[in-house]
Length: 436
Image (tube, rainbow, N blue to C red):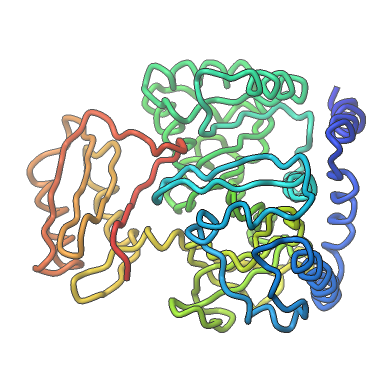
């Protein structure tokens, strides 16, 4: 069944949709093993073609240089810029663009458009990454994602396609205990070869399985792919322990594309064939390799609606050492998360949310939580607790946070029955509504 799906049905499906996925995937499989210098040469040549096409066909970018060496002189694209100039970002004569949008978890959603080559490139990059782990199109897959419960006509077409390709979508919008009981029952019957989704939702399901005494480690899951959020160490441990399988981290976004994925050696490889990645400081200046900076993405297959020097708002670090796996692709040493995952004190001291998360997570009786910075001097902690949580636990959190945040920051704690996910279906541990 699997060879039929991966070798015949999937290529036919992509051909009928006029996608170049198979051709692009074949090239990705070849290029990844080239030396880094050769990959960089291919990337620069492709960047030159991209800039020439965009300068010639996209109204907003008519005045940009086409020399790859002058890439850094092109102004950054941001969500605000793209909202204000959506029509000008469309290439003249571009046809059959697919409308898409971000979930809007950090503010107003962004509406943007995808051409067929861009869609094909992201699918091809994902396919290559999953094959690193020995799974392929046609292996039974469970996807825990931000999917609506009520399906539109187009969604029903997608549901039929997923059934053919043996993918089952479970909505992350509703993760109540009753719903998760049903998910666990289905997963045990379905016995997926791999699981894909938000780390927050998958780890929540794993904790619920442990609470119910339901095993997931005997299903034969080969790998769990996590993406769209920061993957925390404690989530990786929870998921890996529950499924008795490795957890592969991925980094990407609807707007910026499929950017990087972890190989079995544990390194995050950038899809250099399609992605030019820059790291900059808050003023937009480049940062040295090995130092953290905001990730700026140029997607080389986005000619129809360019993602060109797009500021993602995510913080990461590039590695200087190659990966032992032998691939010549660049390595992202870490992705620290969104800039909104950082807490800023009145003195403008910047703390990663992890500084506050550890104490809350390790406090007895805490089932789930969310940290919201409302202002420089106000941080709210939303808690869902059980009977084991007591006054000593609350006092411990307050004392720990006071040491880290200082006396000027007021901490308000609210107790809830449930913490709802974002509009996208993700669960965010930290949300900062201020900037550094």
